[in-house]
Amino acid sequence: MSFTLSSPVAGAAMAGYLTSPTYTVALDSIPGGGLTKQYAVTALGGTQTDVSTHSTSSPFALSLTRPATFKSLGTVNPATGVLNSVPRNVWKLICVKGATPLAGQPPVNAVIRTEITVPAGVDTADPNELAAMLSFYIGALTQLGKETVDTLRYGII
Image (cartoon, rainbow, N blue to C red; front, top):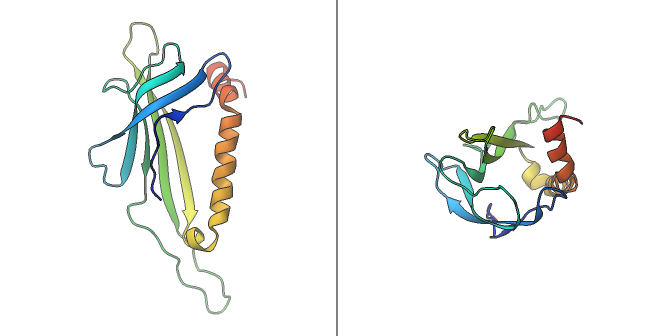
Protein backbone atom coordinates (compact mmCIF):
# COMPACT_ATOMS: atom_id res chain seq x y z
CA MET A 1 0.00 0.00 0.00
CA SER A 2 2.97 2.27 -0.34
CA PHE A 3 4.56 4.20 -3.18
CA THR A 4 6.76 1.45 -4.59
CA LEU A 5 8.00 1.20 -8.16
CA SER A 6 8.69 -2.25 -9.52
CA SER A 7 11.68 -2.32 -11.81
CA PRO A 8 11.90 -1.95 -14.70
CA VAL A 9 9.26 0.71 -15.31
CA ALA A 10 7.71 0.50 -18.79
CA GLY A 11 7.75 3.96 -20.30
CA ALA A 12 5.36 5.27 -22.93
CA ALA A 13 6.61 4.83 -26.49
CA MET A 14 6.84 8.14 -28.35
CA ALA A 15 7.12 7.91 -32.12
CA GLY A 16 10.22 9.67 -33.34
CA TYR A 17 11.72 9.86 -29.85
CA LEU A 18 11.61 6.59 -27.87
CA THR A 19 10.93 2.98 -28.87
CA SER A 20 9.86 0.48 -26.17
CA PRO A 21 11.50 2.50 -23.38
CA THR A 22 12.13 0.88 -20.00
CA TYR A 23 13.72 2.35 -16.91
CA THR A 24 15.50 0.30 -14.25
CA VAL A 25 15.08 2.09 -10.93
CA ALA A 26 16.66 1.88 -7.51
CA LEU A 27 15.33 3.26 -4.24
CA ASP A 28 17.32 6.38 -3.44
CA SER A 29 17.98 8.23 -0.18
CA ILE A 30 17.71 12.00 -0.10
CA PRO A 31 18.95 14.31 2.67
CA GLY A 32 16.18 15.07 5.14
CA GLY A 33 13.88 12.84 3.13
CA GLY A 34 11.85 11.36 5.97
CA LEU A 35 8.60 12.32 4.25
CA THR A 36 9.89 11.63 0.74
CA LYS A 37 10.51 8.41 -1.17
CA GLN A 38 12.66 8.68 -4.28
CA TYR A 39 13.67 6.34 -7.10
CA ALA A 40 16.65 6.97 -9.38
CA VAL A 41 16.88 5.64 -12.94
CA THR A 42 19.97 3.41 -13.07
CA ALA A 43 19.62 1.75 -16.50
CA LEU A 44 17.72 2.25 -19.74
CA GLY A 45 16.13 -0.25 -22.12
CA GLY A 46 14.66 0.03 -25.56
CA THR A 47 15.83 2.67 -28.02
CA GLN A 48 16.61 5.90 -26.19
CA THR A 49 19.28 7.70 -28.18
CA ASP A 50 21.27 10.31 -26.21
CA VAL A 51 19.36 9.63 -22.95
CA SER A 52 21.38 9.32 -19.74
CA THR A 53 20.72 7.61 -16.43
CA HIS A 54 20.87 9.21 -12.97
CA SER A 55 24.11 10.79 -11.78
CA THR A 56 25.04 13.45 -9.27
CA SER A 57 25.48 16.12 -11.93
CA SER A 58 22.58 14.99 -14.12
CA PRO A 59 19.78 13.49 -12.06
CA PHE A 60 16.98 11.29 -13.37
CA ALA A 61 14.63 10.55 -10.49
CA LEU A 62 11.03 10.44 -9.34
CA SER A 63 10.01 11.35 -5.79
CA LEU A 64 6.81 11.52 -3.78
CA THR A 65 6.49 13.70 -0.69
CA ARG A 66 3.60 13.26 1.70
CA PRO A 67 2.10 15.94 3.93
CA ALA A 68 4.10 16.60 7.11
CA THR A 69 0.94 16.18 9.16
CA PHE A 70 -2.41 14.97 7.93
CA LYS A 71 -5.30 17.37 8.36
CA SER A 72 -8.67 16.14 9.48
CA LEU A 73 -12.14 17.51 8.97
CA GLY A 74 -13.22 20.51 10.97
CA THR A 75 -16.51 20.90 12.72
CA VAL A 76 -19.98 20.99 11.25
CA ASN A 77 -21.96 24.18 11.71
CA PRO A 78 -24.88 23.10 13.91
CA ALA A 79 -27.25 25.61 12.31
CA THR A 80 -26.56 24.67 8.67
CA GLY A 81 -25.20 21.13 8.94
CA VAL A 82 -22.36 22.15 6.59
CA LEU A 83 -18.66 21.78 7.36
CA ASN A 84 -17.13 25.08 8.47
CA SER A 85 -14.02 24.32 6.40
CA VAL A 86 -12.46 21.44 4.53
CA PRO A 87 -8.68 21.43 4.91
CA ARG A 88 -6.53 19.78 2.24
CA ASN A 89 -3.67 17.29 2.42
CA VAL A 90 -1.07 18.13 -0.24
CA TRP A 91 1.11 15.47 -1.87
CA LYS A 92 3.94 16.34 -4.28
CA LEU A 93 5.17 14.11 -7.08
CA ILE A 94 8.34 15.41 -8.72
CA CYS A 95 10.36 14.08 -11.64
CA VAL A 96 13.76 15.62 -12.35
CA LYS A 97 15.94 14.97 -15.41
CA GLY A 98 19.29 16.55 -16.20
CA ALA A 99 19.48 17.75 -19.81
CA THR A 100 22.15 19.58 -21.80
CA PRO A 101 21.02 23.06 -22.95
CA LEU A 102 23.89 23.39 -25.48
CA ALA A 103 26.63 21.01 -26.61
CA GLY A 104 29.62 21.24 -24.30
CA GLN A 105 27.61 22.78 -21.47
CA PRO A 106 26.85 21.12 -18.12
CA PRO A 107 23.39 19.61 -17.65
CA VAL A 108 20.55 21.67 -16.22
CA ASN A 109 17.54 20.08 -14.52
CA ALA A 110 14.18 19.86 -16.24
CA VAL A 111 11.42 19.34 -13.66
CA ILE A 112 7.86 18.03 -13.65
CA ARG A 113 5.85 18.89 -10.54
CA THR A 114 2.47 17.37 -9.87
CA GLU A 115 0.64 18.48 -6.77
CA ILE A 116 -2.28 16.37 -5.60
CA THR A 117 -4.55 18.15 -3.14
CA VAL A 118 -6.96 15.84 -1.37
CA PRO A 119 -9.75 17.34 0.76
CA ALA A 120 -9.60 15.83 4.25
CA GLY A 121 -12.08 12.99 4.60
CA VAL A 122 -12.24 12.08 0.91
CA ASP A 123 -9.65 9.33 1.47
CA THR A 124 -12.18 7.38 3.53
CA ALA A 125 -15.57 8.74 2.42
CA ASP A 126 -15.05 8.69 -1.37
CA PRO A 127 -11.83 6.85 -2.36
CA ASN A 128 -13.26 5.75 -5.73
CA GLU A 129 -13.35 9.39 -6.83
CA LEU A 130 -9.62 9.64 -6.08
CA ALA A 131 -9.03 6.46 -8.10
CA ALA A 132 -11.04 7.84 -11.04
CA MET A 133 -9.18 11.16 -10.93
CA LEU A 134 -5.76 9.46 -10.97
CA SER A 135 -6.83 6.93 -13.60
CA PHE A 136 -7.95 9.69 -15.95
CA TYR A 137 -4.87 11.83 -15.26
CA ILE A 138 -2.38 9.01 -15.88
CA GLY A 139 -4.32 7.81 -18.93
CA ALA A 140 -4.42 11.29 -20.44
CA LEU A 141 -0.69 11.78 -19.88
CA THR A 142 0.03 8.40 -21.44
CA GLN A 143 -2.16 9.17 -24.44
CA LEU A 144 -0.67 12.64 -24.87
CA GLY A 145 2.99 11.71 -24.25
CA LYS A 146 4.39 12.42 -27.71
CA GLU A 147 2.12 15.41 -28.20
CA THR A 148 3.33 16.87 -24.90
CA VAL A 149 6.98 16.44 -25.94
CA ASP A 150 6.20 18.19 -29.25
CA THR A 151 4.40 21.00 -27.39
CA LEU A 152 7.37 21.50 -25.03
CA ARG A 153 9.75 21.34 -27.98
CA TYR A 154 7.93 23.64 -30.43
CA GLY A 155 5.84 25.80 -28.10
CA ILE A 156 2.56 25.05 -29.87
CA ILE A 157 -0.49 23.98 -27.92
